[in-house]
Structures are given as structure tokens and as C-alpha cells.
Length: 192
Image (cartoon, rainbow, N blue to C red; front, side, top):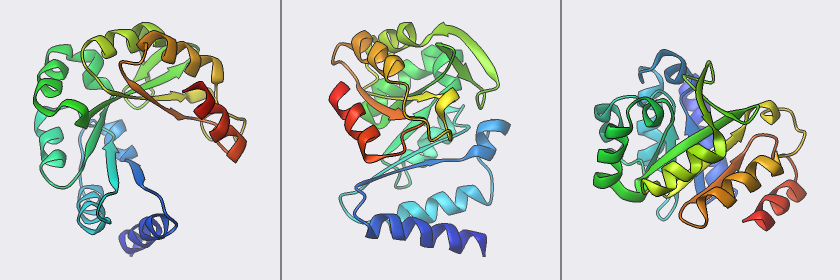
């Protein structure tokens, strides 16, 4: 089945020596709520992962219940997007409860944050949002240059630099979008 296929791909990633896996439920990102068959697939990935590895899951996590469900069932860290910008009070409660197990996605198009599966402009500049989130205690930000995602064109180093400068060491920054080669990885590492 398609699920078995996905699980075997995940096992190959772990076997190759990866220490962290980032899983996004694209269906849930668009609909706003996790559903089958993806929910079962994520649960299976969580139950079969190697000791000492990190599993981060995102996509459509717009309610505290959906977030708690993952965090209480083997997922190490969740990635929030829409909720962080629409419900800052809920974000604050979740960060207070789960600390560094809450990460926030900063999906950027033209320097502005996009939410709802990239469909909507949140109306806030990426660096401004990064500074606010760091101040709220969010320890991990995943920054995606949407324009570079899937382009094989290299990461948006200027965007990443602006976010790193904005968080001044209070949050870790994960780079996404356009990261294709070993030298892309090296360039993002050198930024911090």
C-alpha cells in the first residue's frame, strides 16, 4: 500500500543516518485538520523511529487538541503556522506547557509570512514575526523561502540572515526552501 511505501522510505532515511525527520501533512495544511490516512501513517512513523532521533510534524495543526494528540503520541516537536498568527494566546499557552517542543513555521513569500497552507498573507514581515516569536519563547523557527521551495535554486540566504539577526540567538533557525546541495547546507550552517 501507499502507507507501507511511505514507511519504507522513512526507514531508509533513518538507515542512512538521519538524526531528525520533518514530516508535513500537506492535506491537513490545506483543510485545517489532520485526518486519515495521514494520521495513522504519522503514528506509525512515530512508533517505529530509532531511539535518540527527533520527529517533527506539522501541517494543519490549528487546535490545541490536534497538537496535544501528536505530542502525547510519540512526536517530539510540532510545527505550527496558522495558529501562531491567528491565536497568539493559544500559542503562548502551548509554549508554556510544552516549551521547546513547539516550533513555528515562517513561510515567506516576498518577505511576508504566509499561512493556511501558503494560501494567505498573514500581513507581517518575516523578520518582525521572528523577533516576536523569539520573545514569546518559541525556541525553533523553520524558515521557508516559498519562492525557492522545490526550485533547486539554493536557499534564500538574505531571508535567513534577516531572521537570524532578528532572533539574536533566542531561537534556533532551520532553513528550508531551495536547499539542494552540500554547499547549500554549508552556506546555511555558516549563517548560523
